[in-house]
Length: 206
Image (spheres, rainbow, N blue to C red):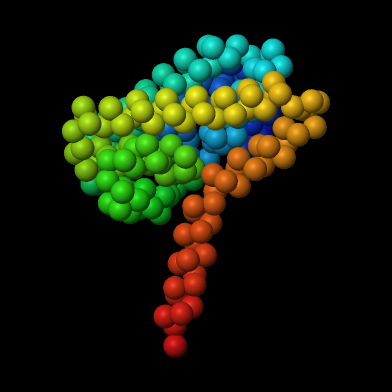
């Protein structure tokens, strides 16, 4: 298995199966080293394969939702335990401080609703619950937004893939473009931020 295989949702599902999908959704939201997993496209692809009879859609809807909620709760508990000291942690292959700072900036800008919005932003969705724990957000408040966000994210992504596979003739030929579109849409906010930052720096330079 190569590193690129970990970013390929079709490879992950065909190799790891139903249990693998659930585990990856949990790890992407519950472990700081899981930020590189393709959560959005994985869910869409799983929904598509369910429409073709390869995976059970009802079990996917229930189990991915639970995994997403448990994952965020794990991230929150981790953040609450380590506290602000994590900002002094040295970068490594499994940890990059800039991702944590990006999530903190997003959290400071949007407040508690970050827990919902972050579900649809790669990398940020991994670190947002950690930042919430560090910031001592009340767990009851966090859990409410966690449940809402986890439900909307998992069900929406799964049903997009499921409906697509159910109504489009010969859907196999379109699954790769669909997954690519989901990846691009998910990455759009981060790309926009980078472009905006570069533009601001160029305008501010003499």
